[in-house]
Image (cartoon, rainbow, N blue to C red; front, side):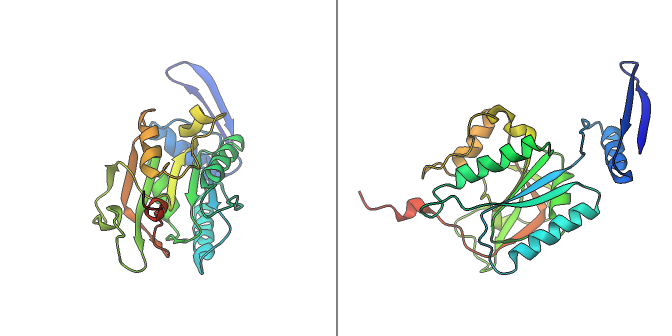
Length: 233
């Protein structure tokens, strides 16, 4: 597929050879909405943080990847292998590996997924079409408890809402968000470097976290709070 025209504001040639009709459609759609162009529009690397899937969770994530591909997006699903010596002690390194891989491979989006989620098939497509730098779905737990979190209590169907923090069960980034940390780690491993700490770091670069209340993802395991298990001082 070939697109051939002059850019009106600069009077220069713009000619593009796309790999498929879907790629042309997505590029044209973005242009009409005033979005920046990309060599692979809406392409996404889905990074599973670990390879210890809860029952039915891999199948749900793979179905989401397949649906995303069927909508014309380039998509890749891979597992970042478990680097932890003690439980959860290397999740930061694993997440850093994922965004470095996504940037070097040229993907526009990076979708972090944990091994215990069951997203609906259209979750990724709906999040990506919000066109915000960092966005998360509502996460609910199979035991119907909030576990001290606010997001599971949010009423669905209210559109986008800006929030300060959320769990990292499923999180969609535009990979450009991580460019300031292309050579230095963003995610940290130390206990205490929790979600609030990292989202505060993002705020310092002008990126706020959005919650898409129209997308709900089920989490099969309750959240873990390592600091709750520290010995009494």
